[in-house]
Image 1 (spheres, rainbow, N blue to C red):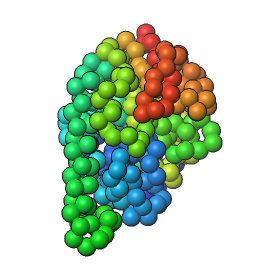
Image 2 (tube, one colour; image 1 turned 30 degrees about the vertical axis):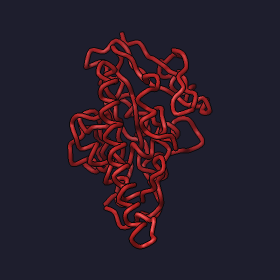
Image 3 (tube, one colour; image 1 turned 60 degrees about the vertical axis):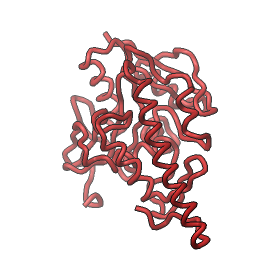
Image 4 (spheres, rainbow, N blue to C red; image 1 turned 135 degrees about the horizontal axis):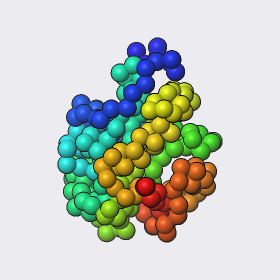
Length: 261
């Protein structure tokens, strides 16, 4: 079905639903630096000391995204659609309850991956196999780069519990743009939405900013990797300005904010 869609199709952005959990999960994983598009389903994803295939990781994280009470929840996500088919997403949320939600979400992630590791250890002891194959847009220009930008962070080989003691990505009073990705085959297509005609990643960014405005937040925030100056320039053109630096999972990021009128 997706192969038959084109830039002439009807484009919309809607609120996500629980049934979008696995789609959101794939995009969150992509935005965090994992290769989840155009790869074999058995390709491995590393989370700390746990290795899981792409299909299994998407299913596992998808269950967390299908909950209403996590950082990466459908309740905090907007879905870009072409002819009703999901092609991209942006997860964004209030900084007011960020700290408790971060602790809860990373607790779920850590427990889920630890359970997988424990199952794998049992399986390894039984048959000598350590594989988990039976369990259930980075481009050269700035606009393409936004389409798999975390608008920020990446998982790392550090234990996920480290996230709980790190500096907060966002602060109270801010609407934080966290994770965005667009399906590879749609990244260079331009659509019209809400009076603007541009690529999907840019339209999702504009929609995220507008969502923050509608919710009454005085500012929008995001973080951008120091090694991606093109993204820094892109966000600056959208009205974001530097607001210090943050060390997250061993990577240095610029914090950027946009004050709303």
